[in-house]
Length: 243
Figure 1 (cartoon, rainbow, N blue to C red):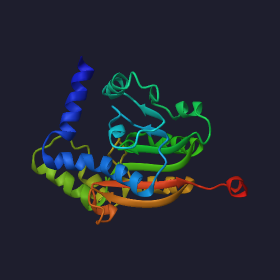
Figure 2: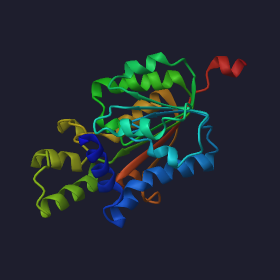
Figure 3: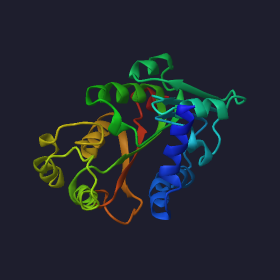
């Protein structure tokens, strides 16, 4: 019962607490849906990391085969399994480790998505996750993460302090360094100290980087947006070129 209550609270907090908050949290789903349609991305074999309750499935063309992986911290994965219990094309796996990706064959997915998840991954595991995603994916990669540096972060934290939030883990020195992009001077803890630029570099090392955009306002650069959306594609190997 506790998990169900947590799921309801979580979804209500993100999607039903005012129009502005809903607009912000829906922006990532709208971005992915638009990108898939506009770029004609093949979603037949779809892998999602951090799927929670499978909400993304409501916004994309239905894959022939879908695998959703999630830590199930708030019970979202349990709800996804319940909602899709009669659909054998949807598989949900509880996992906290990149080792679970080892069970999939190379090039077995045509698309990969991960929304607001990579900021939660232990920095020591990021390379392992990206290596495995690179191995199992032959297609498009879409990742969204929060912008936790620069002027956007400074404004967010100042607003929180003005309204009296006491849950801010930043010291004044860390807030200063994060606001000028000196993330090496900020201790990492989930969102705190997360640097989307480093993630972009790690992705670029393994994939063909297509675009890095800010959302919800794509006409603004990523540094001035609340969320950063990364689109990349599997590199074409020499074997594929010869074929």
